[in-house]
Length: 424
Image (cartoon, rainbow, N blue to C red; front, side, top):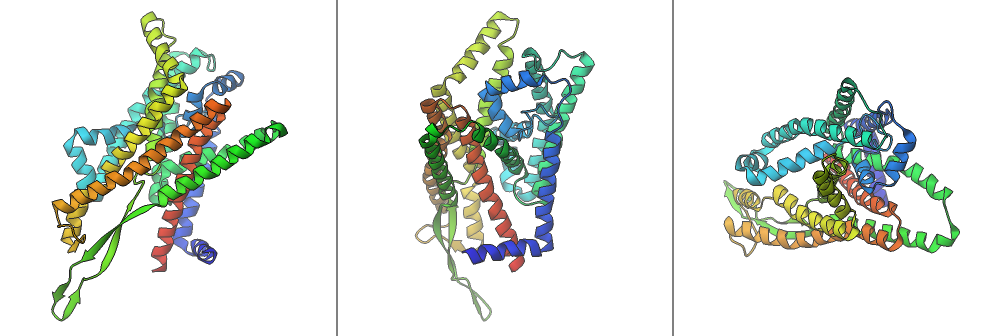
């Protein structure tokens, strides 16, 4: 196994195409980190640090911004507007049949148009979110009161930074390796490791050593579980019918169709967090409204979401539902059954056509249950640990760990696929 890894790694550096893709990804991530270091003018650093340390909502949003929110950089929104737009478009496929047909049945051209619509929707969402953030930061004294021109300028800069990050992510997906949006989130999480390690060493308490060892063991178990569920497959046997063409006999080969236990990957976690963060941001902003009844209602929402039990239940349910939802969007059993029938393939003991589609749908429903429960439990496990220990950083760290492990696995698979193509 070690020899195979070394051979693959050597091929990555020797092959010009793969090397160029990997270097492009690294260059794009460097540009992203440079942009994340450019702050918006007029920031009160002391107020910002105090506000961020006491706000779990902003801590989670900082994960999506790739760390850009921690210093209020010009890319503070990160890929959050793009993720929100993608969620809205995915939901619309259920309500609008033409969008569903475009996404699932029109091939690459249909998916390209679908993604273009998501980009169009990202622009107004970026302006709305930048508007809300500037007002929220002004209310808490982090930004000074701006003139109308200054307010509009800052709003355009922040929204433009989000669009720029979206474009960089699209370039990584097209000219690099892996999913660009996931890699940007990954880069933001990893960039905080040196600072977190330094803070940990500075505040290290030898009397808490058993707790540290316990957290490390839990982290290793989580990583092992994510790897296991991500790699787990349910093989479906498939046989190709024999066909005689002239003097040649074709087909008659038996193989299998791998159905992953977790078809959705890390997307349910990202979707669930986005849905939880958006109403929380609006409620936090409206809680300081001069309209008493509106402020009271918003304050009630903020207080309800601050309840760890309610937050954990909502988080679990959203992850569970989005796992099934994203699987239903990306895996179409009727289309797969149709493709098998066109290629003269069938599942032994199952009639081709509608019976095959129903058979595949039943299997994917059962195995997705395992993946959805596992992801939901992993999502709320840090919240449970936080309730037992009182350490807030565990909540953010657990979510970040889920994203990092899933992104690394996906990246390794993409690089392995590229090297396999070059070998053949």
